[in-house]
Structure formats: C-alpha cells, structure tokens
Length: 335
Image (tube, rainbow, N blue to C red):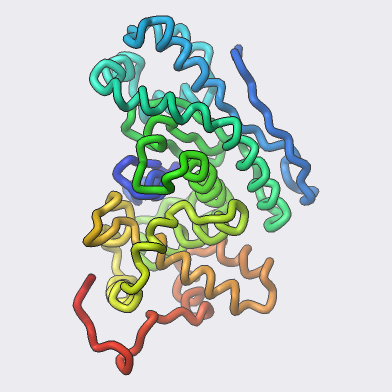
C-alpha cells in the first residue's frame, strides 16, 4: 500500500488494482449529496458523494472545442473545484499544463470517460446504500466524502483519511474489471471505503510481508462484498476456478516473504496468469476467518484491524489451507 495514501494506479487490476503498491501507500456548479440514514449512532449520518468536478471538467472541454488550454482548465476546473481536486492535482495530475497535454495526446481516453459520466447518478445512489450498510455492519465506521473527478489517466484515485477520490477516466478504461460501468465504480468504491476503516492501511510499514498485505486487501474485498454485493475483483474469482490448488500452494511458499510482485499491484495480467491474485486469496482467508468465528461482528472488526504482528495468528484462526492436499494433488509447479 502506498502511504500515507493508497494509490489507485492503472497498473493495478483493482483500485485494486486500480486502486492501489506498497512503495508508500467553494463555489460549485453542482453539489450532489446523497443522504442515507445510518443506524449506527457514531456514524456521520450523511454520506456525501461529489461528482461536480466531473461536470465542470466536461463543461470546460465542450467550451473549448475539445482542446482546452491550461488556463481554461485552471479557471473553469481547478480554481472552482473541490479541495479533493486540488489535492489530487498536487499528488497525481501534476499541473493543468500536464492535463491539457494529456487531453490533446489521448482524446480517446477522455471521450470514453464521457460515456461513464452518465452512470454516475446510479453510482451515487448505490454507493450511498452500500455505505449505509457499512454503518450497520461496523458501528465504529467513519464516513468521509467520496469525490469523483477527472485526472490525466495515470491514476485511478487515492484513498486517504479525508476520503476516497476516484479518477473517472482511469476507472472508466479499466475494462478488465466488471464489464458494467456502474458495477465497476460501486464495487471499487466500496472496497476502497473499507480501507478507510483499516488502521493498518493508514500506517506505514517498511517491507510488509505478502501475508499481511494480502490480509489488508482481502479484508477490503470481503467486507466490500458484504456491503455492495460483489468484490471489486470479481474477475479473479472466475479466472481462478480450477486453479485453486496450484495458486494457493504457491502463495503459501511466498507468504512469509516481502516480495509482493507476483501477487499484488502487478497489473491486470493476461489469460495465462491474472494480476493481483493476492486479492482473491486474501478474500478467501477473510471469508474463512469470519465464517469460523462465533461472533461475526467481532470477527469483522478484528479482520479490519489486522496488523503485521497479528497477521499470522489471524491466518491460523481462519483455518484456511490451500484447496488441495498432497493426497489429492502432487502438482507443485507454480501457476
């Protein structure tokens, strides 16, 4: 994970990989609020999902005939945009000059992003419902805002204690994830919002083990599914069918080490081997941990509170083992 925030890089297959490697972890034209009553008294009570930066971006694009200057973007997009946009510009976009250059160099990227804009009203409503369920599931949950904006195609977004930021154009082009755009946004936002609840996701760990990082991502996948109906990386579940034995045995061999490159933040992969398979394995461990626990709510809280010092004990308590034994398979070749 990138610290102090998680990267939603286009080189990853979820915010997974879009979203996010361990080298770190005013005036509004439109303000879109989705208000959800939360049963948890400690919850924020209102979930804010902002998409007004997207509206402003395409207004500037249209007013300039599709080729805005840096000054056009500065005046019509950045200066009147959200605090999240300004922070994202500093950390990911770089400058309005760089954004103007990306628009000129990659017109297809932004043309496709416009097609995803139409899905945002439905996304807002579904995200609000999912986060309402999170408040019921985890009474201690925090509810910072979600902001959807347009970047320059180099980052799917960031997740910080201040909220979740999603790059519309990057996620819109992440075709290896859910084919339905609305599903893709909803399930990824749910995954990243779970990371907001994880103390471990907000703490810098030098050279985390593969097991620990997998449990962080797997916890977000599992709870994200509980609140939104599907994991962010559902494509991995389909691809792994029939390959469970070899994959999980290889993971066990690597799990105590600190090399994440074969399992996490390694891009979408291909038909021979998908990227980010640690998300899939982490989900399976998280599912087993909660299903074996006598107190489901307590188990979910413990799962999200995993730390480097508790990762091994959590794995042991889950009862998870590779989906084969020496008696059923002698295949030791790495997948």
